[in-house]
Figure 1 (tube, rainbow, N blue to C red):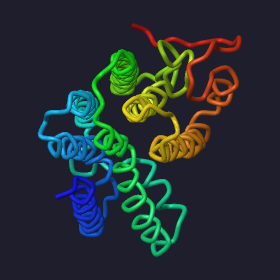
Figure 2: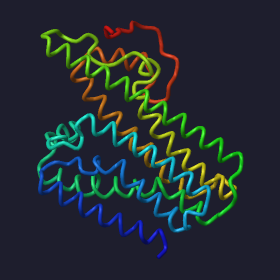
Figure 3: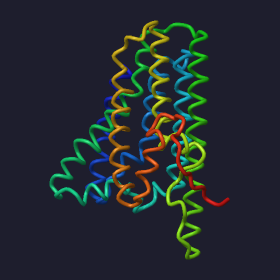
Figure 4: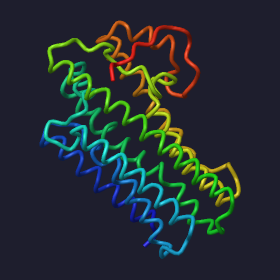
Length: 274
């Protein structure tokens, strides 16, 4: 069977499962829970359809698997798979909408749109399967870039993890944490470096498809474009919540690039005690 057809059947099954689970459990983070898993399945469907005999497909599937393992670990240690581990942003948004409107949003955006997006970002592998060309030096450059971005996201998530552990310890000791949000390390040059590295990895997957086809003009660019749009919207929404909680966040926004790492403007940076 054509790998695209297999992926579409998997997409339909995952959409149905995440939607039903959201209705039964009244939690709306089921797509978040499969976010790092389903693209790995799509990747190996494409690689497997070639009999695991295409070096580029196998390489990209392996890289996507590394991405999935890292992201799954980070999501799990934050309690994302535990009961009640719903993303706080869905809770905030649910409070701003009527129940009926939120359920429409849940079906169309959280379930269908995001699941379709997870397939779209892996479709450069379809391009690779249509252009079975040998690996070349550009593939090695792409692989190195992917791994560099993977390391960057790992470092950013680890810095965030350590900060929130310190913040919880301060609160447990009866002290008011200062600063109240992370501003050092990679977060000194980007307010969301993990967002940047996450998107960058999928742009590299797109470039693998371009290398295989010998052209940058590939329709599969829609995947990373929509992913970038999703992260921009998520950043705006997340930061609106941060500003409502921390008035000093506006100064941080003034100084630091939102996503792409860049030299910060002058201003005071408050470091958490080590």
